[in-house]
Image 1 (tube, rainbow, N blue to C red):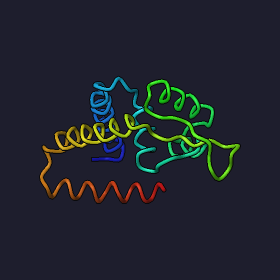
Image 2: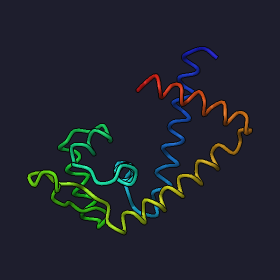
Image 3: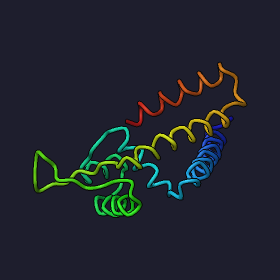
Image 4: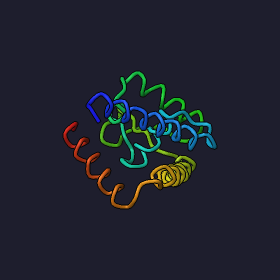
Length: 138
């Protein structure tokens, strides 16, 4: 397969995974960006909105909108940062933590179903290759 064919195949698989991610989030009526924000907060704990923006690779102003949406849905709340009273931290509510666990389980199941057509050896090789590409990108 030439580089162009490889790139097209990669993008096709990427589109399929994004579609499955959207489907996995449907029970919670969350957009992919809110699902990613919940995942980041679950993984990293309390964050300032600017740090959340960095993790999500979005503009700080956009992170404010994401936090507003999470807060409106009762999934996150803002608290004063004990280290700097002028700053705020975003933290998941109990409901946000619960939904984060449920989303992780749903995404895991969707991923297992998606990759089930590959043998264990193929999955291991794909994982190795993707880790290498990710390391080179970072």
